[in-house]
Length: 74
Image (cartoon, helix red, strand yellow):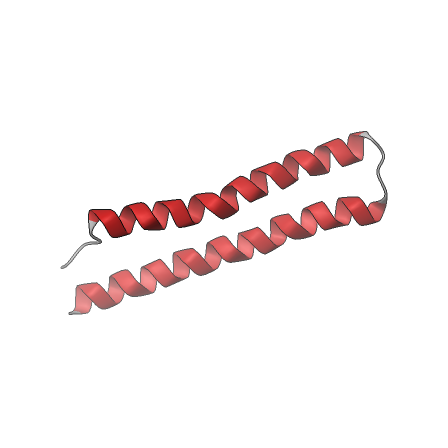
């Protein structure tokens, strides 16, 4: 069984960190907007970005699993 190479694994980790950082920042922004009693539209935008970044994380993880499975089969 062939495992993920170190450089490829590091690239994968970096790819996942980007959306996770965005999720974290937008969660903090959402909290601040709620505390400041911002408009529902502003709050919705922050949480919509969180949801989109969660979808991006899922795609990255699915792609990596698929690639790792294909590599293991070869």
